[in-house]
Length: 114
Image (cartoon, rainbow, N blue to C red; front, side):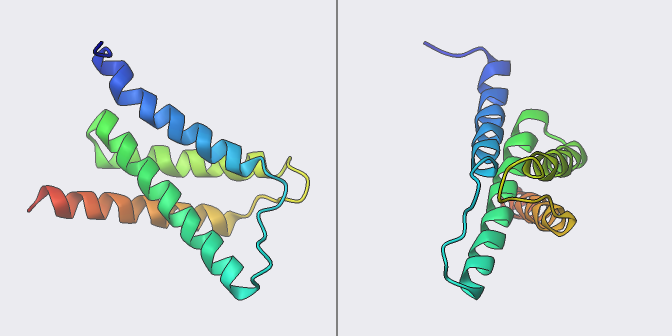
């Protein structure tokens, strides 16, 4: 069974966004590793949103829209976290997410130009 094209393009975006939302709803993701904990969480921000930017680009085929959508979702994700006990929304995390989206699109652009 083949999925209709809009579904095959947008379902991965929605599933990935739902995964990000689910992780954001976890009260505490601290591993107790001190500085490494911070490094790993920021790396997770970058990689999660790099993938989101790629999936959005795949759906819309436009770098600007994919980047804007990624940053917009990052802002809503941080807003969501402000309602989760033990979490807080942080503008600097939006910056990490945006950097991840930019990096994801940069890697994609590099691969497409090969």
